[in-house]
Image (cartoon, rainbow, N blue to C red; front, side, top):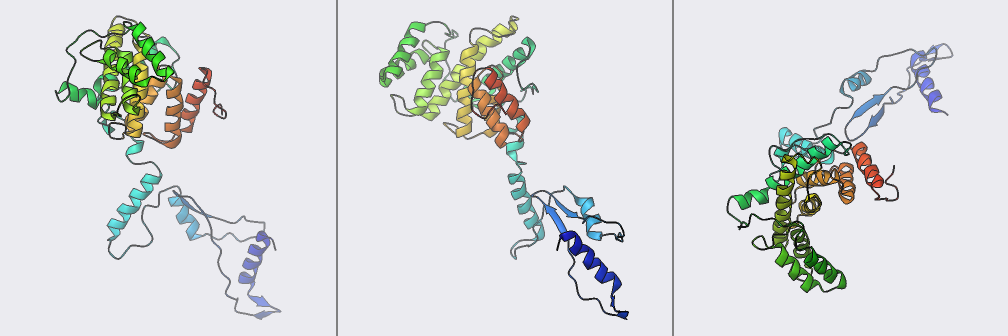
Length: 341
């Protein structure tokens, strides 16, 4: 029997209560209550009405309407060793973790020690104008110069470079030779060259600092040292940021000669914060670094920040923004099957 007919028959038997003219006590017929539930809401659904049906108010439905889409924050059962307040707190915490309402959803700079307090929020998901690019360039310099690693160096807990000269375009032949050696499989010699060029008290070359940091992180031709790696990546970001800040102050809205080094260092630092390589994991900082590098043209960073928005890693889930970055990456030449949705 269809559900509609079953419900009508139930009501008819209950209302008539008589057969053959004789009054009978209606049988005990179970009441049906239809519920629609999710992890965040509970709603009582009324069955459809038909001509001739008597419309009776359902108290459960009216109560449900008042509470639809509200979080169920307390457990139905309270353990013997917990007070009702304790159980509610535990249920709240579990629910907030499932819905990404905890620290991972906070995107303001105050939620991470690795982000400067004056970091501006930029709503653009892609660089459309020269002014937009200048804003992201400025944001990148603030990130590079204001993270916890740089603050530690400023306070004297780490050795600082005594050189004011920052090498960006010098030593290019040596860098190319070190890269050739790396690709040829001579990792020890390649890494030694990168280390010499990366020395803050020596050549102080920003690109070499990025590459030497990666070698230290992964143990390419040397003993792995994630802590030293993040220091050199931070040197590279801060040095490149210094060059870029001077260019921005001079009115060069697209930045200066060190933009490539800055973006590379930003992306690799984001990987460190994401995976906890040489520093405590920091989802908020990782997302912010990825997003800044993405808006300065790094297609790998575009894919990673899209992942952050899909998973709610360091931010609230936002598939619309994720799609924007995936499409932007495709426009820039990074084509991955399925990403263009």
